[in-house]
Image 1 (cartoon, one colour):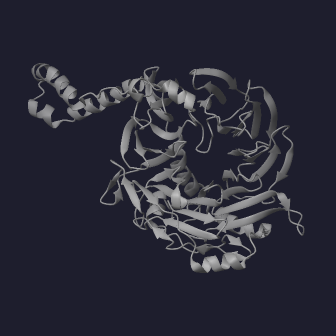
Image 2 (cartoon, one colour; image 1 turned 180 degrees about the vertical axis):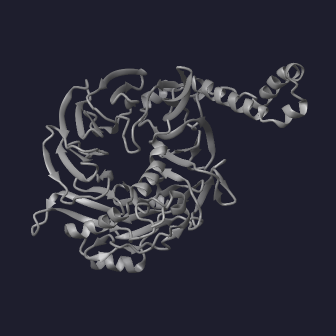
Length: 549
């Protein structure tokens, strides 16, 4: 079989509309919502990102996009290359451009009326940030005469309109670069016989400008809180405590997680003990515990008060991700090279369940429903909802109540996958992110599906954290950050008349156990097609985004 690249996959793959295994309620498969599936271009509104890497509909080289939404759903931050752009969601207006890269998160924060009054000065202007955006960057540092890019974290302080509280006056890069060259041009001509035509035709002015812009960006960052030698871990880590007062970050190459006081801008304590890279870290929803999951085969649970080690779970093999239940009673994690899923009690570390499926591919995403009874996950071309506390009377196994599976594609084994799952709209909807850039939304109440389908035949960038549900009137709004450099706004669609009839005739959700053979059918295909070359090439694209500090 010829080797397939990720670029070829993005350009050539055509996602089939019908699933190999679909969502269902009461024995009926999910119906398409009205006017679905939808293609890019059928959105209700959009923002075209500047300098998005696209030219005549084609991507110029490799690039990536990531996004995040503020705690009050008013601001959208989009990162592309070395720039972060802040948009007002309601007006679609660009409010601020920042210097940064990689993954971002807004600090969780809900100002009280007393805080608001205290923060307001003369004329109602706030002297304290209404928003704080955490982002990554990398800065050159010299080590033994070698320039090395070092990761840093930056807190950007924004006002209520999404603009910087303390913004430096921009410099005239082109003007200063021209002055610098003029200052040395005469000497270059006299002493080194550089002609004026040679100087004007060279890249000297361009490279002078690039060097000056790079240093100017570093100077602009000095107005903000910077944490040197730091990164926020993998793309699904939850670095902030739920009250927004503390931050978790990793020390590169140190296998150490630092707990940081955001308001005081100081380190509180460190969590050590792992012997390999820490892939996931997060606070429990009640902010009483901190868990870390690493490639050394262990998960470590600490007290969030002082960092004291509470217990260790040792499963062996590389581990990838964890997820606390919303009541903070349980934690799920993937271990044994991502092929097993375990659940422990947070209080004492007791293992209470394990999914009765042996995955043949990495399970990298977990999402608890707010009912604390359903755990969504994705592995390879499958997405599932596992009910770990419900036991099927016949098999005596915990229920896999839903199983969605992409159709098999021999050409694109290991590329066409579901790489993210999350709950939305008060957790009634499950969102699936497919690696070609398509998003699928399943409504568990109406048993309907909405699909926002990538345009076939174009090469698009890799996108991380690209789907957002914004609550509001008439069902709210979906936002998709797409790899063609567009932010799209979609109104949720209601069920068709046929779906409504099926819903009325049905008797509600029926959780049917799925035998192990059915779930592993897709995994067998993934194992067959996941050659080391194709898997590694594709994985590098995803890893490049969250390690780009």
